[in-house]
Amino acid sequence: MQIKVPDYGLPNFLTVRDVINGSFRPVATKYIGENKNVSEDAHSEYLEVQDADLSCKHVVTLMNRNTSYYVHRPIDMHPCWWNLNKVSSDVDWYNSDDNRYVKFVDWNNEVHFFPAAISIVMPKEKGLSWVTYSGYSHDKKLGKAYLKAIYELIERDDFAAWWHKSLNIYLVDDWDSPLISEMMAYIQEGKKRRCQLFQIPNEWGLYTIMCIIESSIFPQISIGLGTNSIKESAIIHAIDECVGSYKGLLFEAFHGRINYSELNSRAVAKHIIKTKVSTTFSNSISNLNLEELMKNTETFFAIINSQCGYTVKAFSTKLQPETLVDTTPLTSRLLLRTNRPLIKGCMPFW
View 1 (cartoon, rainbow, N blue to C red):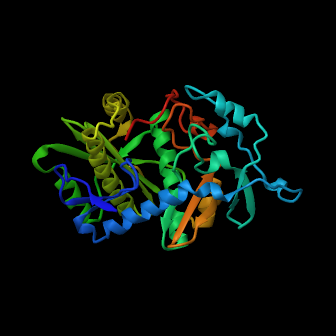
View 2 (view 1 turned 135 degrees about the horizontal axis):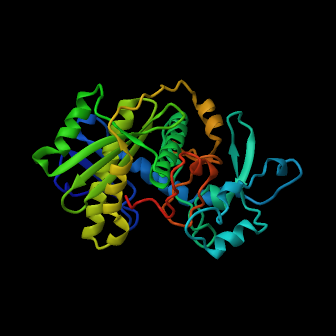
């Protein structure tokens, strides 16, 4: 069942939820000028979430001499590494002989097995404290599902570098799209809200855009991200996600499900001021195809479901996992992104 989320002062952005539980997700937000079917996008996310929760059916436990050569346990995922806290069950798992694995393929279509506990969503009592839905995607076309999944891993990696290692962000105020100008003007209409766009640089030649909506009343800060090889596509995705986040925070607050202490709006605002650069970032456009991007980011794919389109899971041994909790391991790549002090803990609530 789908329902329309209240406008919350932005009726030209349509937000639709597929109601499967009490969570705000699965949800999609689109501006009316985008000429996209927001109901289809919400249903696509519904299929993504549904399949993610069933991805444990791909777990294999039978290993032989031939398959064991391709079994990996990435050391950077160890729960003891660098972050603020650790839970004993995470540490116990890493030191255990857990033989649950999931089959992934690499850029050469070769098979690799990764521990299920760190590579897919598992039932709460069988998984780790820090594994999230990041890296899942659904699309009618397999190639597009792969791109969406790897783009999400990269945007979360870039966002983590901005938050945990104070990576500079660059103001974005130029684009070749009347639609983006219209969206920005609409959000800031009446001067009730301020909307800014920043680019988070990366070495892949992709555009990772962070959209920030600031308001004098709740929610004071809303954040949206978008990563794409096309600048305008990354911007539009970031704006849509930011407005969806803005509406989601209000929705959750009206339903009494917000922990206000986790929002950390003041700290986020200070961090933006600390890291923003007024100059434009000179981006080197990437010509990397999917296979090259997979190889450079050490990303592997598993097809979770091929019914009604394709739901896939991307797993990277190089990129920083999404840090929604303060027990998430912080990778060596993250620590080396800048020489600035490490901010431990989790990402700001968004």
